[in-house]
Image (cartoon, rainbow, N blue to C red):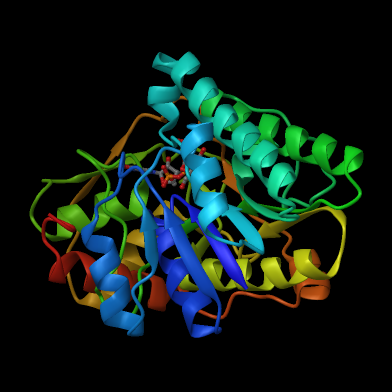
Amino acid sequence: MKVLLTGGAGFIGSHTCVELINAGHTPVIADNFDNSCPEVINRIEEITGVRPKLYEIDVCDGEKVREMFKAESFDAVIHFAGLKAVGESCALPLRYYRNNIDSTLTLLEVMAEFGVANFVFSSSATVYGVPKEVPLVEGMPTGCTNPYGWTKLMNEQILTDASSADDNLSVVLLRYFNPIGAHESGRIGEDPNGIPNNLMPYITQVAAGKLEQLGVFGDDYPTRDGTGVRDYIHVVDLAKAHVKAIDYAAERKGVEIFNIGTGTGYSVLDIVNTFMRVNNLTIPYAIKPRRAGDVAECYADATKAREILGWQAEKTLDDMCRDSWNWQSNNKNGYK
Ligand code: UD1
C-alpha cells in the first residue's frame, strides 16, 4: 500500500516508516520539521535502502495537502503529526487545539475528496485521564487532565463521528502507552528539543553527561516501590502495530480502538535500575516532589490488540534500555 505518514520524520513516525518499508509498503512522509529533522530521511534510507518521498508541508494547509493527494494515490493515512508537550499545552492551549484538530479535519476532508478510506490515528493512553483501575481496557471511561490529552480525545471523537457518517471510512485509533527505545541500528531514535520532559530521554542525557542528575518525581505513590508505574513499549514494537493497523483498516469499515502497550507496568526505579544494569552505567538520581498531573499507575490490558489485530509486543525492558542508550551514545546531539 502507498501510505501517507504525517509527522513521518518524528520519533514514532520514522520507526513506522522503516517497518512499513520492511513489510513491502510505500510510505510517503509529510512533515514540517517543527519538532524533527530532515536528516531522518537519510537515516531511513541508510537502514532500509529505500528513500521515502518527502513533502515538507504543514498538514493543516488544505491547499498543500490537496496538491499532495493529487500527485500521489494513497491507500491509507497514518496521522502522527501533532504537538505533544503536556506542559506547553497548558500554557498555549489554543495553539494545541488549532494545530492538532485542524490537521485531522483537513486530512479527513481531503481524503473524502480523493476517495482515500483508511485512517490510523496516533492516540494516547492519556485519554484515560486518572485511571480508576488498572490494567486499562479500551471500553473504560475517558477524560483528560490537560489540553494535549483533550486534543487526542477530541480527535478520537471526530474520527468516530466521521466514520459513522461515511460507510467507506475505516478508522483505527491506537492508544499508545509509553514509547521508548530506538531502532537497533542506533541510526534513528528520540531527539527531543531542549531539556526532555519524559523519563527515558532524561535518563539517557544524564548517562551522556548532558544533564547532572535525574529527579524521580515522587516516591510515595501507592505502588510497589512508591514511584510511578507505566507501560513502557519499545518503539519498534509500536511501529509494527501500525503495519497491522493499516492491514486491518483496509479489510474493514467503521472504527476500532486498540491499546498499544505490553500489559506490564514498570516503576521509575525499575527503569533506572534496568538501565544501569544493562548498560553498565550509573545514573545519579534524587527523589523530588510529585509532578503535577501524574498518576500512580497506568498500564494496558493489551488483549484486544493481540486477539483482533494479531499484534503483541515482543521486546523486553532490557532491549528498550539497551537500544535507548545505543541511540543516545552514538548520537550525542541527536540528529544535529
Ligand atoms: C507523558 C504525558 C503523556 C504523554 C506521554 C508521551 C504527562 C503528565 N503525561 O506520560 O500525556 O502521552 O508522556 O510519552 O506529562 N518521571 C520522573 N522524572 C523525570 C521524568 C519522568 O520521575 O524526569 C516519571 C514520571 O513521574 C512518571 C514516569 O517517570 O511516573 C513516566 O513519565 P513520562 O516519561 O513523562 O511519561 P508520562 O508522564 O507517563
